[in-house]
Length: 252
Image (cartoon, rainbow, N blue to C red; front, side, top):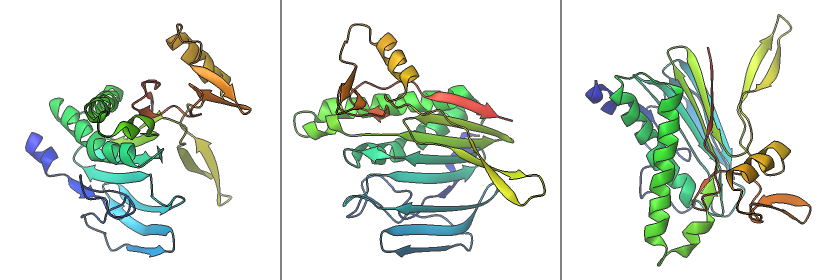
């Protein structure tokens, strides 16, 4: 069974996925994988792939670069365990998003293999935790030579389709939206499936205060905006240990 997981079909391609240590000048890489006859290309700061194939059907993806260095990463992996989609919205630099893209799916795959390919909410939660622990260790080991690593982070949004069940895991303020047909009207209704973690949301501020009762500066109103430690609005995977566990949900 483990060998089957090691032989997964991997769809990682420019600029959405990459292999460790090979990110290119702007933080992206052209990876391997079958295109399924889809069209991919670049138009200025836009990269796209039209209608590719994955385990359960078709997909398309696009990204627009807003910064001089692209801080974001994303990936689609499809195989025996189902289909894994990861969106990593980096901030402060590309390092955390790259690390997550390199490690999160690997942890997910290994954990799923332990249970003979069965995927549960705990599978994804453990993968998140192992990735966070690994990045925190990396920051600690790099502190003397790369102190800037303590200021970078990323949102982490994952969707997994396994045996007709959709799992959603979100850490940060990215958003999952499901398009649903509206009867026979031909229209599409947008349904939000994820919960955002942003210090501007009162419930999130209260949760942070409860998690850090001895830190009166855990959330600070700065220039009219609530920020974690006065630094950043969103709560994502980073080295500052100001994160919260990923919210996990599933839809049959």
